[in-house]
Image 1: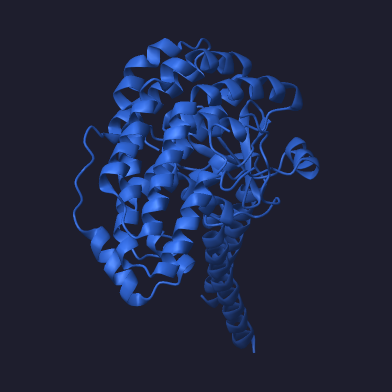
Image 2: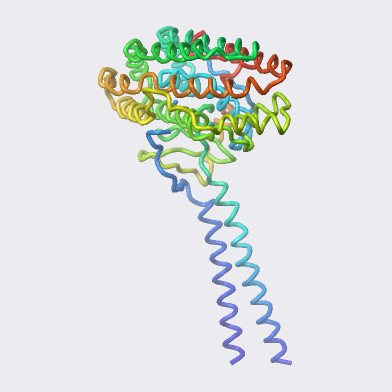
Amino acid sequence: MLQIRWIEGAVLGLVLLAGLSCESKSQSGGQATVTPTPPPSASSVAVSPAAPTAPPQMVGADDSVNEELRNYHRHHHGGVAMFITMAIDTLGLDEAKKASVAKIQSDLRAKMAPTHDADRDLLAVIADGVSSGKIDTAKVDAAVEKVAVASYGIHAATSDALTQLHDTLAPAERAALVDKVRAHWEVWRKVNVDEKMGSKEKGARLAKLSALLGLTADQVDKISAALAADAPIPPKSDPKTVDAHIQAFATAFLADKFDAKSLMPSAAASAGHVARHGGARLVRFYQAVTPVLTPQQRTVLAAHVRERLDDDQVVN
Amino acid sequence: MSKSRTTKCERFTLIVAVSAFSAGLLVAVPAAAQWDPPPPEFIATTEPAYFEGHAAYWYNGHWFWRDDHGAWNHYDREPPYLADRRAHFPPARRSWQGRR
């Protein structure tokens, strides 16, 4: 009887050891493993070579490069065309192809100059308002609308360049570009739509501002309360239209033959959303913050906003 | 004497079994986190390497790539081509913040 129990125990131990061994093998012995992750949703948006800004590293979700991208998308709202141009910067092309793609990218950026100029004007108006202690609502509203209107003609203006880009890239490079466009849209949406206004959570915009200006707890509470209040939804603004346009772009760009004209309806339907929604949120944030700051803090913040004018945008 | 020896064996086996089970649990938890695919911020800012017809990203010590259906995959063993490429051309990252 005791012998039988001993054997049972030994068998159990061996089975468990074998199970452990099998588990380790499955993680290191095979070639490729599928990670059960949902496919990218449609809703996830100058000629300068991609400039490495961080050394190769074990990168986490919250490193400084990731944070800089989030801050960039909080301040710039050039739309899907801007996401495409930014995506080109990190395609990782070989040297032979880089030169021809850089030429196409230069053309894209030139066609997007009106959006870029309007984007800069908006930031300048906000910086002036922060500096003076009062943001002129009429001026900033007009500046936001200028960015939105400028974005209307971008797709038509960039169609030829997009076709050239498609024809220059290999299928895997086209897929990488589409993935990057979706990634930019996802990050843009994360910081301009998903992030709760007035959130005091670590990593949220208010927490970043608090670190920049050394806000007191009372100042943080006042700003948070002002931002948490219901805000009017920007008119003519529907994120689903951008989802649809990015999905249409992905389908068209991944095909062997690219027809930019087929994207005209979705481009027209989505034009202006990123500018209106992102611009309105940007303005609202600085309008809530400015009255609570000391003159010295306003000076620092105005300088910070003016630095965003110098960000490496889609047009130089 | 014989009974005592058998009981010791039983205890030893039980300890081995429990230890093996616990070790299995400990191995499983970090392994799951290790396979988290790169976040969108990383995809947007990092240059991929092209291998076997797709873009691959070196992230948290592993190469990740999407299949034709958009699902993330990873290589359990680093393919020699990607290992060599990583050694000679470390993946570059890009920031657009600030003047270039």
